[in-house]
Amino acid sequence: MQEKGTISIHTENIFPIIKKFLYSDHEIFLRELVSNAVDATQKIKRLASLGQYNGELGNLQVEVAFDEKAKTITISDNGLGMTAEEIKKYINQIAFSGATEFMEKFKDAKDANEIIGRFGLGFYSAFMVADKVEIQTLSYQDGAEAARWICDGSTEFEITEGSRTTRGTDVILHINAEGEEFLDKHRLQEILNKYCKFLPVPIKFGTETEREPDGEDEEGKPKYTEVIVDNIINNTNPIWTKAPSELIDQDYLDFYKELYPFSEEPLFWIHLNVDYPFNLTGVLYFPKVKNDFEITKNKIKLFSRQVFITDEVKDIVPEFLMLLHGVIDSPDIPLNVSRSFLQADSNVKKINNYITKKVADKLAELFKADRKSFEEKWSDIGLFVKYGMISEDKFYDKAKDFALLTNTANEFFTLDEYREKVKATQTNKDDTVVYLYTNDPAKQDTFIQSANKKGYDVLLMNSPIDNHFVSQLEQKLEKTAVKRVDADVIDKLINKADTPAHALTEEQSTKVKAIFEKAITKPNMKVEIESLSPDELPVTVTMDEFMRRMKDMAAMGGGMSFYGSLPDNYKVSINGNHKLISRILNDENEEEQTALARQAFDLALLSQGMLTGAELTDFVNRSVNLI
Image (cartoon, rainbow, N blue to C red; front, side):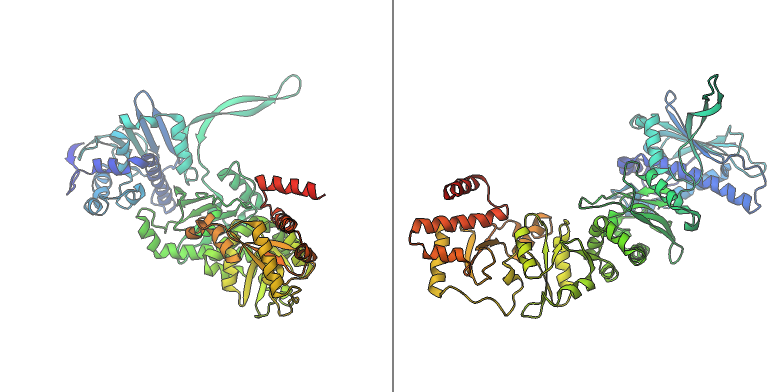
């Protein structure tokens, strides 16, 4: 058997194109060749189960080996094998049947996954790292002869009689100068761990030494002997391939450790398993998120039939679910096409919706089954739930029944429960229910106490996403306003018809305003005289709710950059009914008036942590003199 020939390509030589486009991702040659070997192994197993192959199956596995001196990497299997005719068909023809279409469609491709697989080019990714590729193969068919195929990366190939004596295939890569980094045990192990860790057929890569019990020594202590065993790099039956009924909690926790060796235990998990209208399996874990809102992307790994594809799952998993960890495996996701195609693909949309629904259902089930436990986990999952409610309307509709609001007394309420709690006391004169919240209870304690004195409740909203969540609540809840407790004096935050009468005349109010404007001398502080309860503080400094919210969003990169560039402006509310204001007004010494006004203003700043530097020093010295 001897044949030389030319691979038929109706356009320019494809090999330089492969090398050029796939260079940035050239480690995937190993994924492709090992996956092909696994396919061949699974096919012989299938033929045997159908009674179409009656020979011995033997120990079915794939082996990866390398020879640093000879500069070769070999991927071997004991699967189907090929005849010379099959080599011509599968290696020379089918791999290039889409070549013309490929050249036209993907000449501007940037992503290797846009190219490999869709056009049967998986095998030819070998030429990214090899300047010569050899196949030694023997078909399972009775009377088949061993065949050898060799190609040097041009369109010319040669088929001769092969040397293989057992069923299966060896693909031998003669590594080129640029690919020499792969002639390294650790580099190959790293790639195999990344792409092949859960393949369904054992993958052998060299050997390892294990210690086995070997009786006892003279003192009765256990003895061990060292034995050399195959280094099998993969777990062939990961938990997502099993039925949930076969698994216990410890199985899920062990698998999580296998995926993320250095992470804290997850809170809970969801086992995905659907076969209509698309195929999808997987396990998604809820990690402990807390308030660290650096979205830990690339924590969900995407597989196709147990072959690792990518950990960039942005288009398959809804944005808010990127906070989850785990595995999704689906043969129905079009992995080898451009991202724009992925976004438009109907299966991807269905998968996206399915995962959203499963996550919402799981959370609702946990909430109903054990509310106390759910409340205990809320500090870990609240950020995630709120993020989902903001970004996905469908998720909001389900989550509104189990999303929790927490107040400063550390009590938990659903959205409906909280409305019931506060509507009697916190409805303003316009019939709007006002929710008060704090994002920093220690800093805003003065304002919280002022609200509590009135019998009002204050929510705790201190996660990085709560600014957006507050806006979401206002949009979704009827006749509801949400205001930070330090956005104004309490009587203005919940403006009722029964405000206290003014103790000052209009003339006195004008005079007090002038005294404070002279004492403050800050253009960004706008002085206003208010009619408040005599028990409230004489001076309160606040920033308008809308302005502060826009600035906070700008700081988070929420698209409000215009507001972020505006200077901070504050309102200085003077409580005209407080006795200190009467004292300042009645003091005939102008300097003393100014000093008292400045002292009252500085106290208001101090209570908010806004008094710093030289101004704080001046205040301390002034206070000492006053004492």
